[in-house]
Amino acid sequence: MVVPQKKETTSPHNRHGEHGCRGGGTRWLCGWTCERCKISLPLKCNGPPLVFGCHSCTVATGVAVDAAGNLIVADTRNHCLRKIFTDGHVSTIAGARPHVFDRPICATLFGDGVLVAEEFGNRISLWTPQEDDVSTFVGATLARYKVPLRSPMGVAADTAGNIVVADTKSHCVRIISPRGHVTTIGNMERPGLADGSAGEALFDDPVAVAIDTAGDVIVADPQNFCLRKITL
Image (cartoon, rainbow, N blue to C red; front, side, top):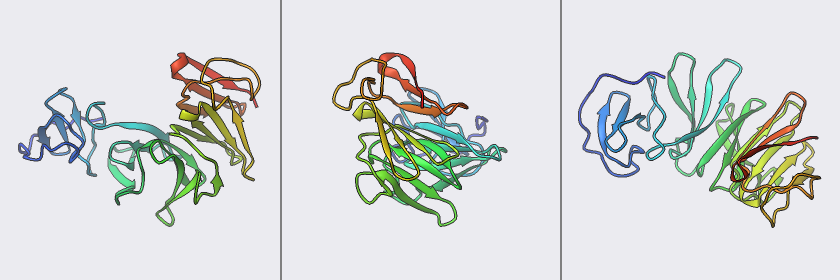
């Protein structure tokens, strides 16, 4: 990451949310220095290398890496997907229009597209670059796979097309096959910490999932301060 060093002007635009900074700030050519926390952070714009940071101002949470080594970033409070190219250039690739994403918090590659977990949207959406289209992939309504989700914060996919979702406020993990079969791991009615079979295991707000080289699922279970493994 490169911190911009050349000051341009002091901006009059200090209203909350206009540039993602709550503390007001000094404008730089490609970012801000927050007066509250003294951390440089980006404008909601594209162009030269930016600095993502400052949890009190703007949040970029989920990151995926494509085959070319570029980063795909879920820019949560800007409600969009950004691409950071290997040369540091930043481009908004989806979500520039309003109401496309509702707090995107995780991104993972899926075929030629990107799956996005939307915490407030209660869905997993799919962005397809060929059509520049965002559709509901997993969710309660108008979805390819109809699965009610509650604040999903993590998503992963394997090369066979299986999708794993951290269904955070349902306290469970969902595994969805390419044919639409849904396996639920965990007790949706009772958060806790317990190992065992799919029906016996307990999670407490699982927030992230990954698939290892053996095809097993690794789950971040932060309220229980641990990592869990689901052996498939």
